[in-house]
Length: 236
Image 1 (cartoon, rainbow, N blue to C red):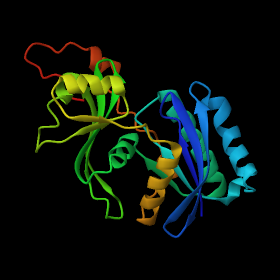
Image 2 (image 1 turned 90 degrees about the horizontal axis):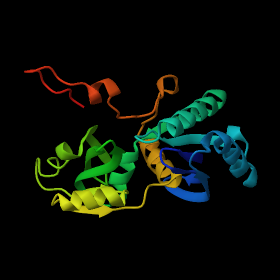
Image 3 (image 1 turned 180 degrees about the vertical axis):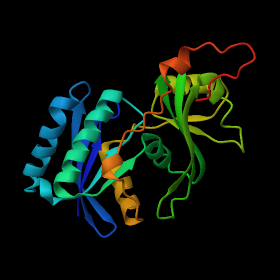
């Protein structure tokens, strides 16, 4: 099976081509994409990788795509491209959360918290139970966006946990808050393709008709509204 991996969730993205033989995955190619140019580069890069290895678009047996959270524009471009490929060739798709990919990259079983800088003094976070020996290695407890102040109360809830993040500046702030943190490299399209294949073997696949990005963003109305006296603050 030929697997196409796509990641346009961050400032820099990538496209990967992998070949699966049973549970064994061989990376054939990995191409970097410049942020801000996804609309111009994504489709031509996919075509170039396929051509370079002698494949047609119809040869793709599975598409693994980073579904966010991340760049609104980048995610929209990826989703539109994936839907076009999947519908044209009836190709299965598995959407993978960036936070899940970070949690799995930690290489640690048990409770894992993945975090990303969401700007506006907020944090994207995902809380998982990771069991690497199971077919789907990460079980989601919750994913959300919250203020940094609220986030600092999370790792101690239900027992201590280390936070994993690809954002060095966020890691510094988390450390200052007295929480253990490790900085990991941001997952590439290759990582998303590998996770997608594992999920696919376990029977997971997206409904292409309803496929959408995972923005984890509260609306501006919620962010900037002022609660009336005695009312509760809007929840994430």
